[in-house]
Image (cartoon, rainbow, N blue to C red):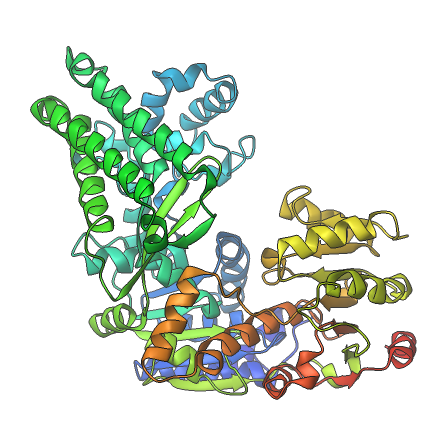
Length: 635
């Protein structure tokens, strides 16, 4: 069976799938992917909205009958692929390979940690009593143990932190509940798969573990397909990083208290040392109360008192480790906690000592926790090393990878220099169904009155729109100011990010039909609202990353040190890809029509604005307000 036999005019999809339309762009993408898999090569492919890239990569992978990992950007997309798309394709093709779904360990119930929670003070916490009881009852029924099964307890409920494991607190084969371990059962099922569906977080967590020489979570694959590949640099950067956090310390203390309580005399031997660590954490939080939310570690430690408080925390952990060491052999859990404590101390030693030049050390400081990160400035080396060690064919695809028709930026970031590239335009008729409006009579984007004036400018446009409106912002501050502005002025239903769950806000927006949704980062991508429910997308500014981000600043500095131009080599490509994601919300089907409003006139007035325009679908453009109103009537 060939690609044409499946996706062509006389293929099985046209025969069996109602409403299926043969698309030349889908066929060309599928043929190219088929060739890449056959040749065991690497392909980077941008496939515009409506290409049908999911079928275009699933069909060749299935036809080649090779062991395949498909990785998606989010768990939602992962589940959509596993529960909807893959079964549909296999039913149509009348094939039955083994397909499996695998998530990260934090998604699976841990029987040992649940037992510990049921016999600890957590069981008496009024906020956790009922969810813990629901989980305990469910634990006797579930075969998989995926927390998504238990709808009665939300996936973000704090109780899950106490009944799931992490790489740090897992006891492995020494766990009393190892035989019934749901994570191990899920991994064994994954090893049997012909097609395994994961997400990028799990894939890169596995890559990071392999780099350190530890066990392989994922089976060796002959084909690796990365969907939503534009997320790869950010997610890979996170998983090739290390961190030290107050959460890690508190989890260690909770687990040590529980394990010591089950060994005669153990808790008495270390209770004062646990209290010392708790006090050091409290003192550190108090010391950090006037520290900025994020900055470099160097700037944090330049203040002597901050350094001294971190040193005191390290000393208290050293005392705890010395206290656990003599009793560690009495309990598998205590031995594990001793190793965890030693690991935290070693990393703190590095943070307070000589820092490595290939990493950026930075911190996040919030009301209830702090994290210190060690992030690689360049992720291309570890990605290249992993790819060289794994002889699989690689397919990387997304609707937003190219910048000004070139993949050079993505290839440089990821190290995929030797890859073949393919740019497949969307089959949708943007030229006749969509228009870009860039107002010229608004202040510059950095003017103090910009936010207020663009809201006033677009208000009549929003009111005249027949259908729903997305207003996307580059900062939460601008979003909140706009929410105050529109609250009493709009005649349409208003939905604001943060005022409810993302899922619920989207559902209510769709039901309204003519609502206005104000969203920031998480609404720029992965949101699909087709038809008249969304007929206008407004973007406040070109989405350049904030220059005070310490990781961004470190990467900018490295580019400058190497003689490059940080704006054109890094900041501009990142902003173009982010804008393409936002623009991608507008046209989601062949019949969709709409207006794109970009309030930042730099896209028309600055020389680099042409690169933004060249990277977007071909749409009519105007800066005349009266013309845009006429266009609403026509479009």
